Image 1 (spheres, rainbow, N blue to C red):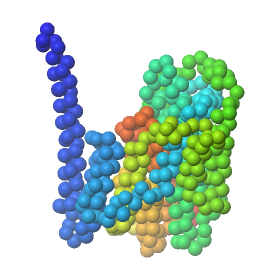
Image 2 (cartoon, one colour):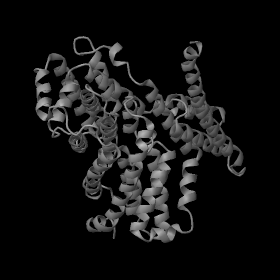
Image 3 (cartoon, rainbow, N blue to C red):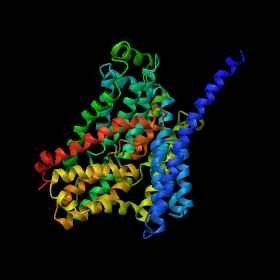
Image 4 (cartoon, rainbow, N blue to C red):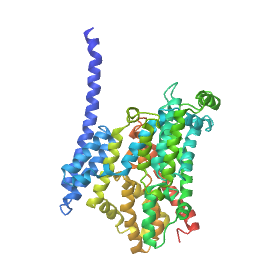
Length: 486
């Protein structure tokens, strides 16, 4: 009897020991990578570069293998940045003064506020009713909705924040009867990946686009207009939508073929919500005001985080609002910490010169000149390299700022087509499909707790390869037609 009582305890101890040993091994590996960069990097490199390289290696191991929660890893990275003396404390914490951090925080709060009304469920059921009653149809509806929103909302994070409550409500409605983890992963990653790929097609669709266009305009002496960017990039965005749909369907085969009762049952659920109530009307008004302010950013000059924060205030304001601060503040603060740390690490790499050194050491190899002379090969190699580089440098703007100028200079000195190569590099900087920290939509979706970081690996790798193929085909079949390749 005594043995039977202690049996489960012994099993628990053995399982815990295995778990601790695995996590401990990964932590030791992370420390070894950290020490290796500090010790083995040539002494000719400045101390700041060696220290920042070590912290970057530590961060990649911790964020990829996740032996401890990612927010805790983020704190460790901040400590390492400051303790090694690679950068000053102001730089180590600089990411937390970025508007992107507050945009994400406000986005989570807005999503929480919307979900405190029936509006999220209403949008979810409307979305479902137009999906043909299948998970695949719902995924395509999400991807197409993101593409349409890209015309009016100039930020991937904002588009993600708008659809996040609807997709979460959609998943909750699907899992009422039984869990459907593959459908959950498929739809959540559809939102994240869809926001990234739809952001490339239009000039204001992502901050990196604006940065790339400015750099390219300075290089060529003529500005890259809205129509120029759309002509070059929008077909690529459209081509990636069905590819993303197919990859996610294959990576996560849905456990259910059709929603229970089909679209009729979905419409019935929509009818049960009744007419739009006062709280929903207030919510719609706040969201409408926020969208107008986002769309008119070029007029008033406010950062996208300002209208989002204003929306949070209005949602909680007595008489005007429809929720409370206690309700709306229950968000994933650890995710906000993760974003701030990622931006800080990107700033540190820029400040110390690590980012430029990494890019320059690869792109400055002797065979690069021969490669740049063949457009399709150059675009394919630059797209792959940019995506690999993005694995270590999570901030998209940092990737763009550090790589595009180097590519333009290499093209200038080798006589290659700088406009095409710089454009391809800037476009590829938005492809962040493998790690959570590569793109803000990834972080926002991960912050819901509905997916794990490992869920991105398989579909992310395949989508990265698909994006490379599409870019190479564009260099051969599309860009020569529209004057980008001459």
